[in-house]
Length: 356
Image (cartoon, rainbow, N blue to C red; front, side, top):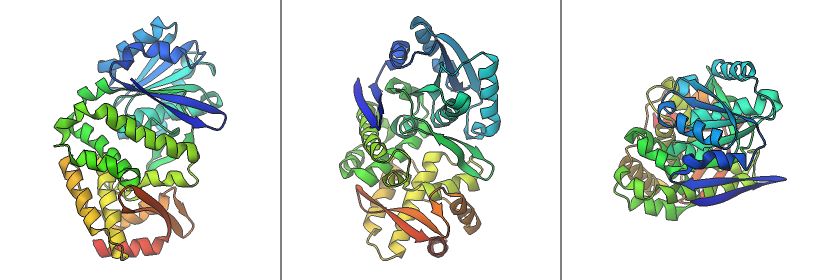
């Protein structure tokens, strides 16, 4: 097992990474919260695999356990599902002193985390991520949110977990597509902060090589993210680099109603498109774009997704990095180094128009 610590003003929490961690999760959760009841939130895909195991471990650690299962998928990341959680928590007699455990992928973590952030104006919560994407990215840093019909993650809060426990054995049950979905965020970390990580990924044959490397991959990505979050917890500055590929990625997700492409697939295409836009501005990113494209294809991720200007405009208009007529875009000219660059929205739209 590997341990990382996220250090923030006045508080900190640990990220535990390794195989077999769910078996003893109850005792580790007991060490970070005084809750009497643990409310486990999970989805219909994860529940048959791990819910009983987690419930038994929590009970063995002295918790009363209450569980809520919602339909799997981004389509459940809504205010309707959030209200269902509130009502189920209230009906079960959950109190402010109890804790929420998010067992699953990014959707589960966002939903359960936001419920914990807002129920009783804040409850303890624990992240038990079961997908690669959640383990390397969304479980760390305290961002929680739900979607609106108009766009992704438009209603949310910052609420840091008490503990992140990433059992990498859970990755063995992922489909090939879901595993590759997470690799988009891994590649993103290489692009923005570690050329060494990019090089190691390029030395792999593809998804079949991941099992013997994923403990290290999860550790490296979390190590990068915890350093960025420690510097900029509330996403007012440097943390923006973590959004490389996401502004345009959200456009692709929204254009296809969150059904055709996964989040990672959309981010993959968004990263390539951003390098193409940099090239349009005269930057020397052609070789890096070819390098990124080859790496994405190795992990079965798209290097491009068709999208209309109308969809681009709507996504940019709702982007949290937009302020008035400008938007902060994340640019990478040298692998491992990212910059946050303010840009007029109309200039961004003109550049996008040239690529259609």
